[in-house]
Length: 153
Image 1 (tube, rainbow, N blue to C red):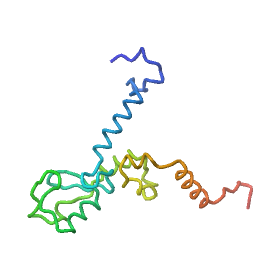
Image 2: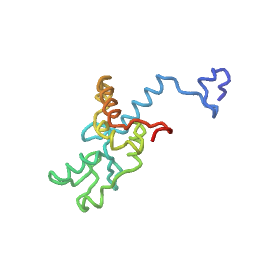
Image 3: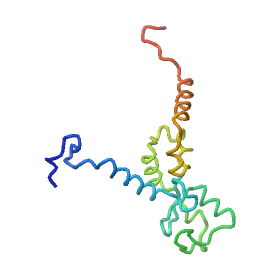
Image 4: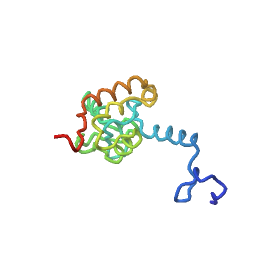
């Protein structure tokens, strides 16, 4: 595809056209749908997958379901799990966890700090007020030590 008629700001170094902002919003909404736990309807928190069918859930959601009477089948597709123990059919899904972290803008270094937001459904995460964000930044700044100049003892 020829992108020579597009302004430079709309073409990546690779030559691909940069998606329009509205297109990116649609893509992000679609991605949110893929990252949504079918049990709680929130973004996966500690994504955990059933090996037999590859359906994924929040770790807490699926383990809570197991503890409150066990599950004999996948809550999504009903694949039979009655012949297995949870240790055999459940596994942490690092690939989905990495996708969720990228989606939420969480780097591995601040994953622990940001994790609570991952439990909120996308509609609630978007309504976080500016003042809450500012308060959070103030708390972080209070805990930082002031920088010393190289000339100070």
